[in-house]
Length: 123
Image 1 (cartoon, rainbow, N blue to C red):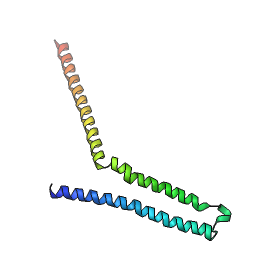
Image 2 (cartoon, rainbow, N blue to C red):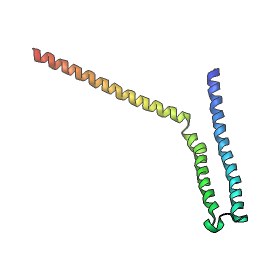
Image 3 (tube, helix red, strand yellow):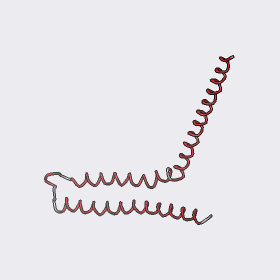
Image 4 (tube, rainbow, N blue to C red):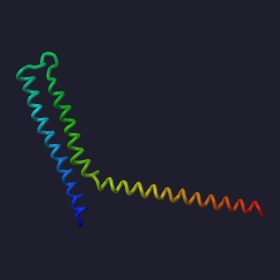
């Protein structure tokens, strides 16, 4: 393996670690903010009279977005990462290449047919 390949592998691993770390940082912030929201609502009765348990809505929304983040990093990226992108790109490029070859073949056949018609009319 040459230095360029090693560097690419290192950078890919580094990006992956950052993604995973981001999920856990997101979770820690979610927990800390949730505790403060709970304390603000239950202990200090902030906004409880007007809105009830408003903090629950915020926590559940944030938890929903954290779950999406988790799924994106640990499930989607794992199955649809760089290798998947490369495979899909190669598949599409082959499909387009085949289509272009068919179009070129049809154009050539049409030109040959037209030339035969033209030469057939002149005789």
